[in-house]
Length: 303
Ligand code: GUN
Image 1 (spheres, protein in one colour):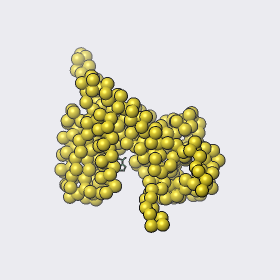
Image 2 (cartoon, protein in one colour):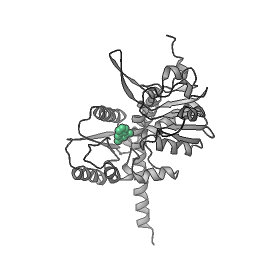
Image 3 (spheres, protein in one colour):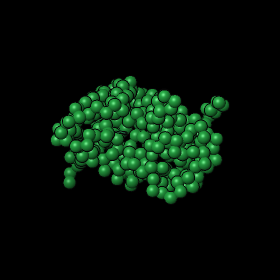
Image 4 (cartoon, protein in one colour):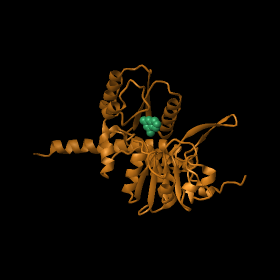
């Protein structure tokens, strides 16, 4: 087999390393000024993939100097108990970020849980106040995976203004916020999904394709315009010749014949999600400091 031209592969691992190094420097400066950023991660139940994600988030936080607090709760934890924990974390001035790992067990109302997190501590950017703020183009906490994808796209494409981006998949975690961020960057955005007519033809119009559907190898070379830049958010485990491996939503080998650049799976988008979680924790701290300052100055000003 011919070697893959590495110039076409977008190295998410290397970019994530750079982002984490920047975060580490900022944390050091904060600590020298007597401020210790902290992230609380909540996991309910023992879903194997979620356990791995949470462990990696906690490890990465410690590596960059962010204090991390892990709350592991049994799968039969009541919703009331989980909400009480979140309210306690909301009130705790020493906690800057709160992340509740999804999915939650079926008896817990996910929307209610996410709405309970203080929007200024919502490092996932899933609270309606942050979702709405993003739609309005305000400076709010935005979901980590799409934020990481934007960084990879800016590095790969340079100017994004006027480019036609097609987002495949309409999830709340990736597809919808990704479309909003691309729009904010002045792209022309098309969202397509399982009910769209002629997906390949729609994708072939794109300068940028973001694939986030969870279907292994769905997007082949004939879906892509020559010279397109492709961000593959899919992480799918497949069994092949008795071996298990991770693949994306894009058929990487086929796509490489067409594209200008593409993220591989693994090693593309995955590492960026955690790097942007760390960045969001510092942004959350900054937003909390701004809010506290505003509160102090509004108390001082005569009305
Ligand atoms: N489960 C899968 N992806 C995510 C994510 O980005 N945040 C949280 N909280 N849970 C997830």
